[in-house]
Amino acid sequence: MLEVNGVAGWVALVAESDAGSQLAKVLGRERVDFETFEGVGALLDYSKRRNPMAAVVWVSDAVSGLLERIDSLGAHLADTAIVVSCPSIERWELRAALTAGARGVVLADDLDVALGPCLRAVCSGQLCVPRDHWRQVEPPALSTREKQILGLVVMGYMNGQIAEQLFLAESTVKSHLSSAFGKLGVRSRNEAVSLILDPDRGLGMGILSLGGEPIGASAAPAG
Figure 1: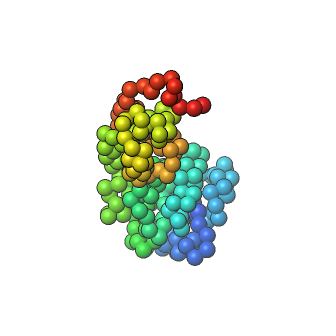
Figure 2: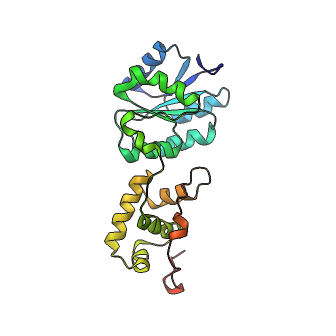
Figure 3: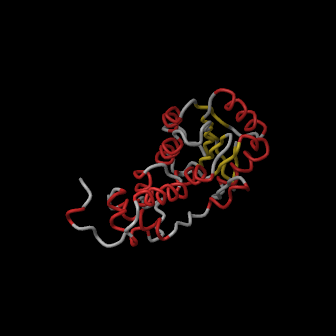
């Protein structure tokens, strides 16, 4: 069993193929009670009968499907500490994992020494990420212009309208958005809006107060 602060529980392992075997070996050496699931859906079905203390989710591609999988687990297993394991992870991908609800990230090369300590840390209420990525734990430092543009995105304006509102070239707006998306750990306007407006994950940062003067009715965003 995984025991933290006198409370014992089990770990759900969501993985397949060789990665699943490697993770299972590490959990076995750590003497952790675990069950293996081939996908998030299988874990969610099983959790209706028995909730895990923690879940280790193997992600071969940190971009593909990461937010959906972690969001889904977090929505149904709010008390479960989620740890993402992956071969490598970029700065914005780590931010995306934490934004989506992961409490820990362990790289494949570090599994033998880091997975056990990471599980105990996250189950104790801590965040645990690779040392080289610690700067991404803090909320992203957006520039005033990035906040301003994001404020208008939240209001529903398209790039051309934002450019007109702020007296910028549309290419400049796109450049600022690309930079802001990377800092937020999102890949699209919809993901950015969802993050900013989410009462639990919303970043605040004065974004909505910097949208600029209202655009006239003739230039208002469509539908």
